[in-house]
Length: 610
Image (cartoon, rainbow, N blue to C red; front, side):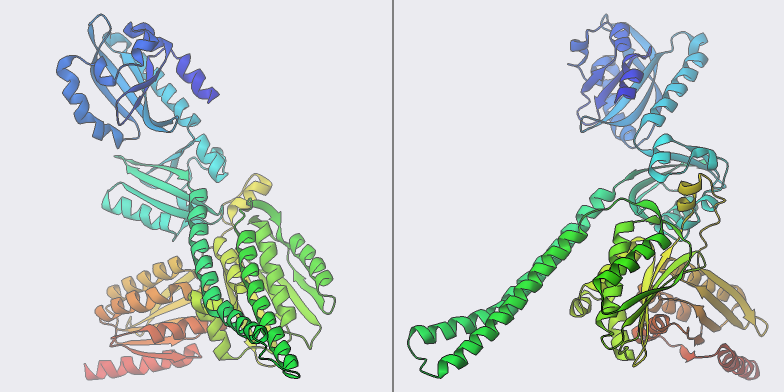
């Protein structure tokens, strides 16, 4: 506010702030008081219409809607002073939140003397730049090649990058983490459609939500954004609280009523002297059983409430050493579980920018779970590896393991709250931590051998920049897809690699569709053997949107090669199960060679029949 005071009250240009709804003048500087002849008190009793000649008042009302939708508004008007003298002014206004009211800051210049126009415009631009640098709204500009041409102070503070590293660089080279996100899609749509757009987007490297507006100018895009993370967190907590109350209500109505009714009935028998001799021992045992059942339900409710309270606290995002955190966790877990050896088998050096406390809690949950399900083996192993710029945290037990049916239930629970509730909240909490970091969770298991729970946390350029003060902007690598063709273009080959999210799956599928149209192909070899982890979030879109697109484009056969990763395989199976009214011959294969052979035979048969 001190910067505002210096800019506003000490400016030589007349300035005021007015309410965009009522047009009331809310504040005025000394230069305006001197230039217009009104006292400050008189000025604050007026609206901006009062500063216009009578014949121009109606124009003011018509311009309000236009002004309200503009970031910066610059135009000539006619004003009059207290003495009634009418003169031409150039007015520049800018939106501002003034004491909780939607307002605009106005800077005026008397342009009666044409010789002074150029100099005064230069001063105005300088002051506008100062306003942009003191606003709390992030503001940047890019040219038509997406090269960053301006980046204000608020953007530096919210994102973390110094403008000297950004100016003159391509937006997507600087922020590869944003490619395929909602921001990227909306940006491309705005450019393609030549339309302004307003939306919300989550930026995972900072774990922040932003409200974003993109304005199109002749040769540039103007983007401004503000942090709405606290609002989003409040909304999430409110929804969680509603779900929590529903669950507690269910527990009260279904689980508490039964033991309470039994206790009341048994107590009534005693009060009416209907229990005789040895029957007291039987009744006492029943009372104890009902009391224990009631106590278990109450503990479950208390644990639910306490768990929700503990996870509702927002921790600060910070730069930290993940490998050192893992060492601390293993030592703590060894203390908590003296019956087991918690061994750190591999610990790669990893610098991460994220929620340290939530990752700490998630890993303790995984280790606790591993200990619980390996009662006959006293060893649990913990690993930290880096794969394609992703930190992979793994907790392995040597317990009873899980069959395919139970693994499928865990897989389904990631998108089904009811199933998740049946399995307990622990794993869903771990998944939520991974999703906040743009990662995921998957399980590999064999009955009688044991299980390995994996959590993927992508690494970002921002972590490197915050640690070293510089980065080459190549630290984050998005998942890949290579598209080629076989048999003179009759077979389109989609070779998926690495880890995939909903956005990367959509982008990749649309690239496949484009290649099919280009080649006029009807056969696809969809090779996911190189896919790791899971892509369960994309299952619904692939099955209900992408496959109908394939059908409509004339595709007749799809050979799908499984990944060796269990959850990736389950994602494929789930996609197949969700397909409806798709007249496409789809087969799954374990080996790429077998899939290619099948399609080659179809290709030859098609040529012969043609």
